[in-house]
Length: 180
Ligand code: 5GP
Image (tube, rainbow, N blue to C red):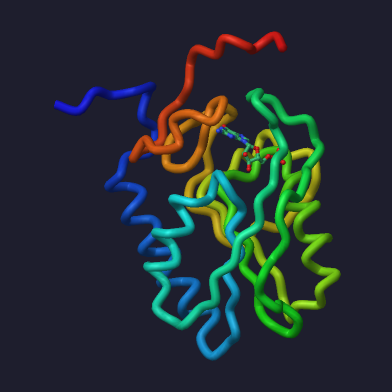
């Protein structure tokens, strides 16, 4: 049997079913539009790949790399854009694909930065949301799962760059640098 890590809070089956629903909804909402899916790396890589394949309309794919937490599991509130888009988004409909919206600072910053490129619209699709932790008011159009205030890993999400490859989402109970 597969060795389990952490306490699973969303299983692979739940994830698959929810992503299928999101894909269906996005396909309907963006039918006939010029959709550009902008993935926020590294965290969104697994969700992005599954979501893109659940969308049944033609899309353009693009990515940005941001760093916000550094090696620690705490938000600094600072977001650094490490790479830029390669696709032209002017006049197009952008869907920002995130792993998790926590304080909301990352997506707020990214929305502002992408808005300067004059897309027709920008909306957010996140696999996870921790509404209790929000410090800024951002509108998140598509949410996979709302979760309580717990640190989660797996399915793209890391702890000190590890555990991104877990095929399910788990709660990390023990963190050795909590005081840092
Ligand atoms: P925000 O700017 O909304 O506070 O934070 C968003 C970013 O924080 C996410 O993209 C993710 O990198 C990180 N983050 C927030 N909560 C968690 C969590 O529970 N687990 C992991 N691995 N990363 C998180």
